[in-house]
Length: 261
Image (cartoon, rainbow, N blue to C red):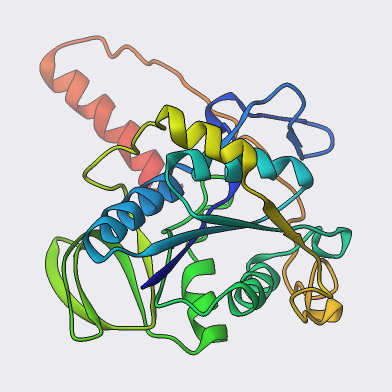
């Protein structure tokens, strides 16, 4: 069995600031991390691999420095790593990103199961997993938090959506997106750390994955982020004086002003 985990390097959103004039993220001095939901996807992949004796490949799209997080994934237990990196990929929205990832998956595969986090914390769209499944023509199950069994070319999955608990059998090959896993991402062992320094990270451009550059980057992105900003939060405290009846009348007027105006 072969498993591919798509991971993304993201800025630590707890430390991100926004330029009030340009409306863009200030990335300078902000540490980069593995997308937390992708950490859960990695852990689930390793657990499935241990049970099914599967091979785990990690794949990411980004700038050359993303190689660092891919090597960390190898140190955790991944067998192979691929980085899709090219100036032609810059500015990709979710559609272009999904196309590029699907081409990378086809080129580095085949795979029985593709796992990714439900969304990236820097975009929060939750669109890439389902879009990749469409490009691959694979079935998809979203918001997975656990798996039960592998049987007869299928995997039994658990998810909890809108107060409804579901157990779903997914026929492989397929795509799943993972919410926060029940187990935290494991720590690397010393021999795996040594392996990560000696394992090649394959860097692929558009020509390596047979990608149409017109469908990549800004050229292939029908959506644009016009501006990012921090909402202005206004707070005020009004003290209501008088008797209980007087305070009730005053409160009614205040609430009425909010509901009518």
